[in-house]
Image (cartoon, rainbow, N blue to C red; front, side):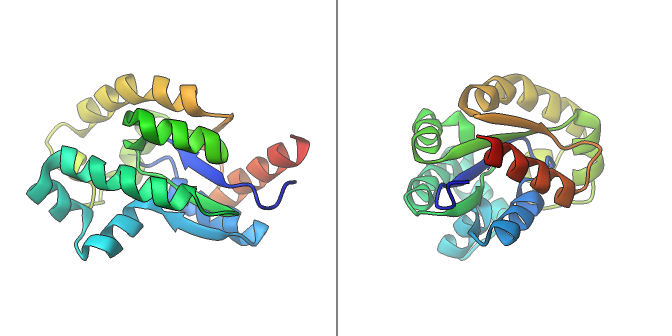
Length: 172
């Protein structure tokens, strides 16, 4: 495999981007970044606070900037935020600067994986299923558009999915 190619993980919240990304980076001896964590470090505040103060538009502008910065590095694994693909600029940068892997999952798995997570501003509602369905309708075509590979994460451990991605990249 071309060791210094960037690997960018896209997909909905709860697909396992951060967990799988850490496994992938560890196995490939690459540096791991999470765009949400990077935003929190740069702002000194958590994602919920950024959403509350700046709204989704303010958050997305920060996210676009962070993805631009991080995607210019060499040999990294980057877990992007679920909504990062809404930005055409971010989609273009990810496509141009690395291999994009869409981690696909079902609404049921997303609900199960995110139900106790209070750090997801878009899910702080009485109708999380409806929110996830609306997000899927809007974003799934964008994930597919930008993806070089699609990997389903529903019934496999993060380690198994990471190994599957490595195998795909080796066969490339």
